[in-house]
Length: 412
Image 1 (cartoon, rainbow, N blue to C red):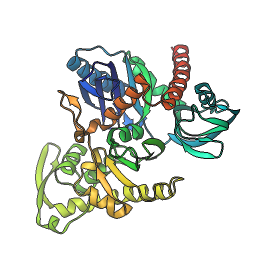
Image 2: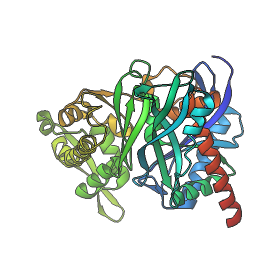
Image 3: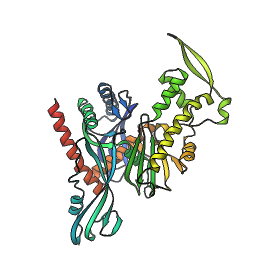
Image 4: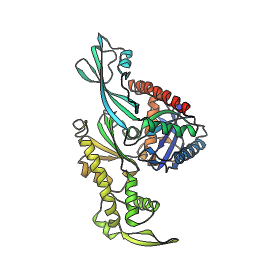
């Protein structure tokens, strides 16, 4: 492992906060120096609903990671998600008069002049492909002779108030944002390895509060959809139908739950804790089929919504034969791979954090897939591994953080 820069990432989800401190190297490797994990109760479907709860969760997760790494954190890359996040494809062209394309020409093309929104700020501006005159599908036009160059950009933007609330939470924990990363983008970076980087992949992340869909074309993130339904909805269904606590429902789901009802489920019994009086808890038996009868409709709803999002996407033709990579906490549900393949009618692969040979002496779980993807994003940013994509993102981020700092300073 080569010595590199130390970066810290913070994944703020609907049920947990994950913090990772990592040493990243220019050769694409990284080592986890410290990791922290804490329950989070102040986020719903990616939106902060309780600032103080989120602040406490962030502080606790960072503290655990700092103690493990023996390192004090000042800046963090932080995740962002939610149904109001927008991913839009925009095109731009510029004439250069029949000469060699310079790096400055590309940066001018990617300057985003005239793209403004009073309610949204851009968090990612990712070049999908360039064009040189009538030639399309160019990855890097620098050095080519052209009359005109063009680009298709994936602009990911988030509501300004959502960004401001997130930055406010970080500031109260004495942390400064180094960058903001869309959770679905990070999940894709984590699970799309070298064997899939030259293919078109659809990454479905089954989170607690949301289910996200990310489209990767030849390894480039070109679009995203977010569904405000996730694993929490399944847990709530179990708690309501069986009249048990959400804590018990989550435990039963993880131990005995499956994506669909099988023939053998009727033969298996499980015990559930039922509150009979105020201070008396009794155990009752139900069959696994009774449990999975509750789970299956919600899983079907999520997967059918995913299917509709894919079929209605502008990428429908480009991803017609693409396989689906599923990840996230919900992807650990028994039978989810086959059930997803049946509904989407596609090849499905399940990938978790544990599938990656990452240099780490720190115990990490599958819930760290977004965090690990954020480390890869930070690595690209620190070492410029993403070329023009990194340059434009740096430019955009600097504008965003300048606005945010001004806003925050004027608000206190």
